[in-house]
Image (tube, rainbow, N blue to C red; front, side, top):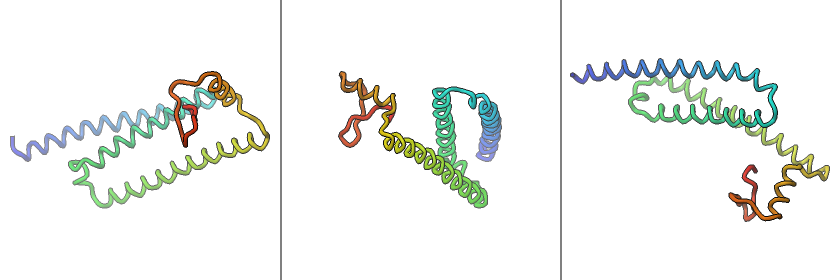
Length: 152
C-alpha cells in the first residue's frame, strides 16, 4: 500500500470517527437540555449532584479537546482562520466560566457574611465541629495547619 493510500485510509477512518463523535456530542447536548426542565424541580442534594455532573461534562470535553489540539496529525492541516476563530471562542468560554466561578463564590461569601453578622452557625457546620471535638474524623484535610472538613 502506498503512502498516499495510507493517508487516504487514515482520513476516511478519521471522518468516520469524527462523524460518530459529533453524533454523540449532539445527543449529549440534547439530553442535557431535556434534563434542565427535570432538575429545576429537584431537591438541594440532586441539584448539587447535577452541578458536579455538569463540571464532569465540561472537564471531559476540555480534556478531549486538549488532546485534539495537541495532536499534530490533526492540527497540522487546520487553517489560520479556523485557529483564530477557535482561540477567540475558547477565550470567551474561559472568561464566561471564570465569571460563573466569581458569581457563585461571591454569593457564597455573602452567605457566610450574613451568618457571621447575625451571629448564626449553620447547622451542618455545628454538627461537623461537634463530631470533631467528640473524637475526630478519618480522612481529614488540613489547610494552613487547621483541620478542614472534606466538603469545605
